[in-house]
Amino acid sequence: MYRNALSIVAAALALHLGTGAALANSPTASHKTLTAFASEAELSELFRGWAEEYRKKMSEQRSRRDAAGQSMDMASKPASAPQALASMGAAKSEAAAESVTNVQHAGVDEGGIVKLHGDHLVILRRGRLFTVAVNDKQLKPVSYADAYGEGVAPGGAWYDEMLLWGNTVAVIGYSYARGGTEIGLFELSKSGQLTHKSTHHLRSNDYYSSRNYASRLIGSKLVFYTPLYLNPWGGLPTGSFPALRKWRPGATPAEFKRIAPATRIYRSDEGMDPQQGVALHSVTVCDLAKAEMTCDSTAVLGQPGRVFYVSPGSVYVWNVRSGIFRIPLDGSAPSMLKASGSPVDQFSFLEGEDGHLNVLVRAHGRGDGMWAAESGSGALAMLRVPLAAFSDGRDAAPAWAYRALPKVQGHALQNRYVGNYLLYGAGAGWRRPQAANDGRIYAVDYARGAQAYELPLSHGVDRIEALGANAVAVGSNGRDLHFTSLRLARIPVSASSYVRANASQGETRSHGFFYKAENENAGLVGLPIIGGGESAGRQLRRESASLLYLRNEALSLTEIGTLDSRAGARIDPSADRCKASCVDWYGNSRPLFLRNRVFALLGYEIVEGRVNAGGISELRRISFAPHAQVDEIAP
Image 1 (tube, helix red, strand yellow):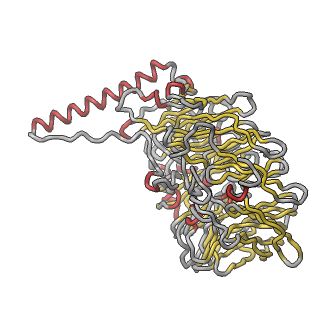
Image 2: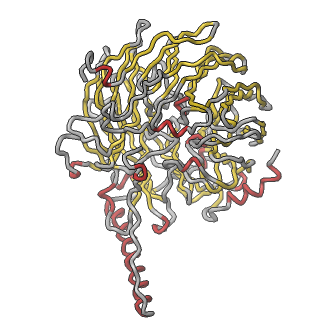
Image 3: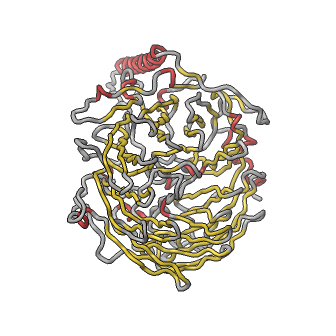
């Protein structure tokens, strides 16, 4: 259904670029890749040529205006690095063991605020690292440390993500003062003590997104996508290219060492108009297994774009005006495919095990920088192409690779791949929930003809998550929070619904949800909640009121209870002596399921619950806030 009525929309979307040869209607493998610059001299010559063209153009315009007796004010140069958080002022693993992070791909860990290391939870909050012991049925604060290195001034820096490999804790932040990504490495002892090892700076622009995460961990490899927006008119920009330095007191910019030489910088064979904007799309891989962390970058010179997706083997970067870069994580040459539209966020992508890339695109998407993913407009389509279609950038995804999809009504579009289906719908996002009696979610059988099934809902869609092989859609209808389970059989259907009166979801981040499967048909759901009708954007400064727990039995959802934050337990930045990251950009509340135990992380509190036939009840709680530990634990 829908395909006949909307096929013309997909064709128009596919032809939006109007350049490049279309692929043949065949998944025949191509071994072509993008071309690297042969030398620093060749790279420099390109930028000098652009600068000369610009100066010549400006001179010609000045001459024409002077001849007409007019004066001309030179246009301002484009900003080389957007200060995305400026409007907010100062606002803003042990993976082989049990995971506490709701990730997009198994084996691709994402930077988060809480991880598990042996018998300890490691928590990143407001510029500090904390450890809490959870062994032997206890719950006890152990240690805390500043999340930045000795001699590092935390002002103007944000420390928001954390990853664990072995006994190494990696804290990922962004420093406006130092102009790049900051990587702090800490040693975590078996007893839970934290020791700072080193801090490194990676030259980059900011990476903040209301949905995406800056870092991934695959084995011991720490992976970053860091865009660099270049000003080709201002001289040779190689001084801002990806570079790394190890921090020490008194460190200078001269200590940065480039990690992306010209021979690891690629471009397509077709010309690029610098007036459309220029970005260096850089993928950096750092090896935490080495005694001294080392990093290498592969970069593609192209037009700007801020949607990226990390699969187990590649990073995909979408350029709104040109297409998709595929940058392998093994250091081999990137490739490209021209494409139209723009994905909503990283969840719009799926690199399938069948050797295809699937992407939900919309005609007027804005990417996922800052809050851009929270709005967008235009026609929707499903793009499905074989990975072999990626080549040297001359080929374009043909019209037949797109399947038009029905549009949705709502502010913020949500999308997720579960099993054989792409699911999508729209809701309030970070905004205050609104009445949505006629909501709907669409299930697209993406690998078998892309047929779209419309499933009516009595609420909006603010979250889509997997329940094993099936799914759940979460959203509000005014002051009430709704959960609708979805059976993803040959014909997808709504299975059951549960309504939590006078509640809204308290976390918009994907990590705020967790499903603990007990078997193929049963498990526990955890989600932070706040009062009905409240904006989820309050997660920036206030923890959730409660953690709601539901039981799934064959897609029938029932409440087992909540674990609640203690009245008056909230600690503001002045009380906890916050020096950095005093706004909870990545949230602050999480459901945790550890070894048949159930916990709620609520700001500086951790509450453990006991689940029995009567529901869930509080067993114990602790505060790990700095002021609560001063007398018993030295920082």
